[in-house]
Image (cartoon, rainbow, N blue to C red; front, side, top):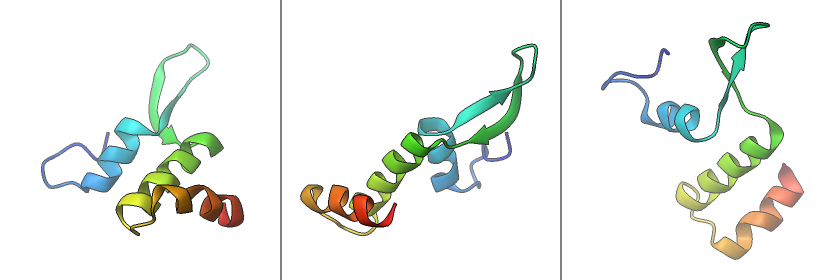
Length: 68
């Protein structure tokens, strides 16, 4: 995994650890390729809106319903 050292981007490390799913090959072996499905992306968006944009709990869902 590229984002795993002390100098790496904390945000990306958090995204991978808390929201991303890892692809697997045909034999079920992890590929080290990560992705976000729509529900995970929406949860991540809610966290970013609350923590980085300062939206209150009651503002996050309407914002996501409009712009996601």
